[in-house]
Amino acid sequence: MPRFADGVLKFQNEVFPAKKELFERLSLGQSPEALFITCSDSRIETGMMTQTDPGDLFICRNAGNIVPPHTNQTGGMTASIEFASAALKVPHIIVCGHTECGAMKGAMDLHHDATSLDSLPHVREWLGYSRAAVDIVDALAEGKSETDKMRMLLEQNVVLQLQHLRTHPTVALQLARGEVELHGWVYDIKTGAVDAYDEAQDRFVSIEERYGLGG
Image (cartoon, rainbow, N blue to C red; front, side, top):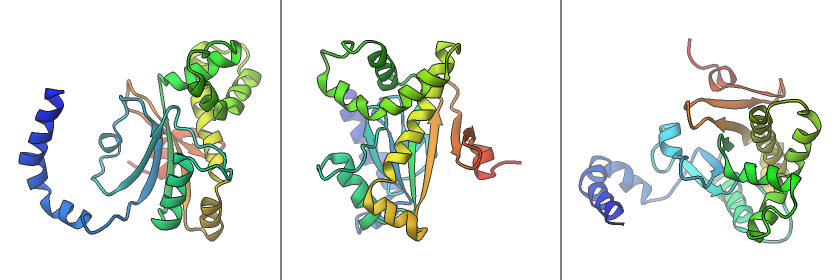
């Protein structure tokens, strides 16, 4: 904890003064460009990965970058999505999965052993929102290596959560009006690469190809 406290002091004495104008502007309100939904994994640093400043991203994090389908039951993710889309009117929503995801490993284990998460009942129930992605991998990845199966699961889970996003009324309305664009990403912790879902091709491609970046 002293290391974290020392970090706060460094922020106050060095980082904050260098960006004083930014923080003064942010004190008046926020207008983020995107809702960024990603995993709670400590190895994911959204600002570093996207090279963004405070105020650019409205961030929601949970185990497995999951978006529960909309219901009348209020939850933290549902309320945050509603606020970001209806109040902040973000023009982009990104669901970002990542390699070495413990939640997705847990979802796969649960599929093969229903008792594997008995000691973590809330985690077990939460990972049920990834069940369809696991079923797809189980049906279509026969004969593939465990590494390939996990990569497919990471991608299918992101696509599934994008489908769940469309069930949220405020997101559906923005989509119908052409006021929001949905994005699916998978971040590789080891290499730093980010692949993005190309809906037209129904596959993940490099972020450069997806957004026409570089040469």
